[in-house]
Length: 280
Image 1: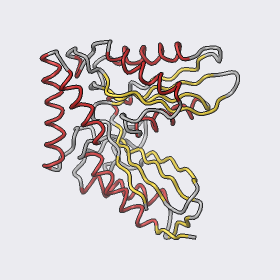
Image 2: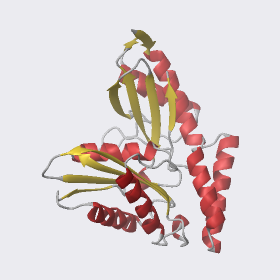
Image 3: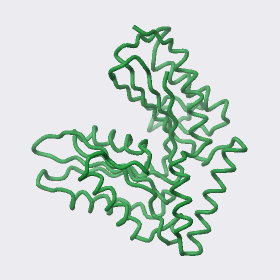
């Protein structure tokens, strides 16, 4: 069995926390550039140009893409052939977040209690999702999630007799309610199926998939393409100034569900949708 000391996980998490906050993903850069070239509205085109400049400055001057450096969501896939040594996994992850946010001079936004609201001053703890998978590797993805967009998350239990049309209507309704409040153009992550909590987890995972990669399921890929077109027809546009780029991509993840229900969760994420991944 392959042994991995949790110190390596701590170091990887620290590095990924900085990388994710400073370097906008290549698929998102390409989508903004494509939207810029296609945009006819002068104000919207100018906003897209500013977003591209902002991403370039953040990367080369080593500063955060957005002032909201988020609450860190950490996904860890642990191979069944891996033995973790050297201490607690969750402690290593949280120590990595502390180190990364300190070294990267990233804003600390986490409060220790949702009612008392005292800042932990180190951006820990992270929200950690662990999954056991085949193999002998550990795959770590750090997703700093800003709450301007997180606050626009929408969830609903549809009737089992409802289908793609009703799912699409709920996604569109959720984007319309968000309006320009969460810094469009958006990345839309949709979770379908499982239980209510599973659908929410799937919607987060959907944000991690590159937006130029469609679902392997033909009917889901069709739904993604259709929603992308309909959301952009809303003309909310970049930062709410109108134009054709309300969203840059729509990703949908699914899971088997119960015969009596159809859980749907919509995660709305701003143009600065961030994630970084490493494999040990």
